[in-house]
Image (tube, rainbow, N blue to C red; front, top):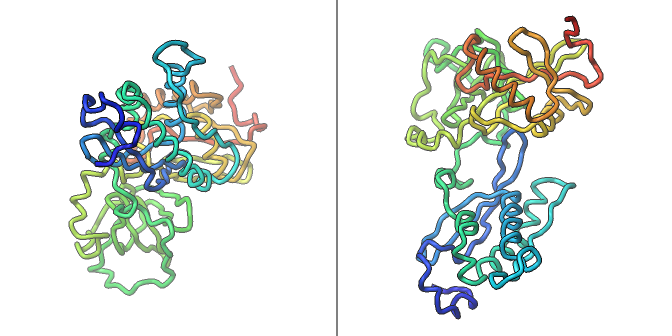
Length: 355
């Protein structure tokens, strides 16, 4: 096995355990559609024991690692024997397209990791570095993009109504309203009968209703007649259930309250229902969904009054209160128990100001 020259010259390198990372290279970037869209770097790691595996890291995790290493090993921060010259990490970028920023960082981050793993062995054995390059359980459950069976982001929506035998055709009935967030998603009303065309993944189906075709979450419907096995995205799809948590979507219902009426949306995100987003992430996502900048985020308290959200502590309070009232409201299994009500920031008439 070929090792970096600096490591080969170190006499005590053989004393390190086999799981110490030796090389790391970014193989791809991976889009994550959480409450905000962000990109992770898919990194192939090779260890001293010649094992290979993939890890998924955001730039902020590189930044946190570098800050911690500077505090520990920088001669400016802690003068002494155990100091070293750390590689330079590319700085934060605040403007530009997220995908282009991520792609432009690949060469710099590859160089950063190369130089980092050429540091003395007593640095390589530090838990900060070993844990950063360690393959977590979450990493091991990820499926490389070329093998994934997620919602097809560029799939063409069919415009021709398929011919089908209405009595024998696979179909489902909508149990809840679903407001699609894009032209690929099929909006549903409770009671709609949807004729099923295929299964997209473990959570999403494609179907047609009233001459419209699109995809929708299975948890919003009751299956009357299931699809044939051949109509699944792939045979043996049930075997993907082990990766269910990685491919599933959770839905957030949100409303834009305005004088001319209420605009209702169901936003599907690749997040677990237990995830608590930050205030800034929610604000950014709602601005993007409703295409309105000057907005305020709100929720309803147990008394039904509208409460404005101003920071992360308010988000925590909203989530906690939803746990108390959530059991009283019937919702799909993959829908967040809390809902967002979006208003114009200067509209104070929506609040109950009576004592």
